[in-house]
Length: 277
View 1: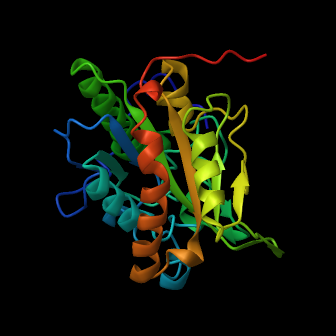
View 2: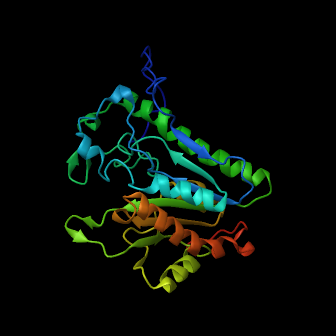
C-alpha cells in the first residue's frame, strides 16, 4: 500500500474524509502532565467516518476484535489517571487504516480480517488510500510525536507504554495467556514488569506472546520509541478479561501495581539504543 508521491495532472482532490459531525482522529489525555510516562492506545475506537457508512459490515461484526481492541480505551484512561500520565488514543477503527502498521503493510487497510471480508476496503484507489492516511493515520502519529517532543522539551525522557488486547482464541487455537508483554531489545520495562506480574501468582504471562515484538517494523513503538532510544513496552491483555467494567478495573489495578515500581526507577529514564547483534 505504498502511497503515490503525487496526484495525476488535473485530478480533482477527493473530499475530506472527516466531516464536522465525525469524532477527532485522536484524543490526548493530560497533555500538560509532568509525568515522564506516555501511554498509547492504537486501537481505542471502532468509530467509522460517516462518509464510509458501515464498511459493508454488520453491527455485530463491528463489535468484534477485528474493528478495535476491546476494553483498552477504558483501561488506558484508568492507567492515565493512576499515573497522572499523558495518553494518546486513536479515534477510529483499525479497519479504516491501522495506525500500528507500516503503510506498505498490506494489512494496514485490510481487505480480510480474521476471515471476515471488509467490503468497503476492496479495490481502493490511491486517492482513497491517501484520504484515509491524511485524515486518520498521520494526525494520530503526529500527536504521538508531538507529545514525545513536548516531554523532551521539558527535559524528560518519556517511557512509552502501549496498551492492546488480544482474542482468547485465534483460528481455533486457545491462547492461555492472561497478559502478554511484547518487546524487542530494550529490557528496561518489559523484564521487571514480567517478573512482577509472575510474582503475583495469578496470571499466565506471555513473553512475546501471543505476538512477538522482536524484529518487528512499522508499528507505533518501532516508529516513535525504539529508534529514539526511549524505554518502551507493549502490553497485551486478553480481551475477555477487560470486556466489562469490572474487568477493566481489575486489570488497571493489576497493571498499575506491577508497573508502579518499574516506572518509579529513575535508571530507566535515559536515552539508550540497543543495536541488533
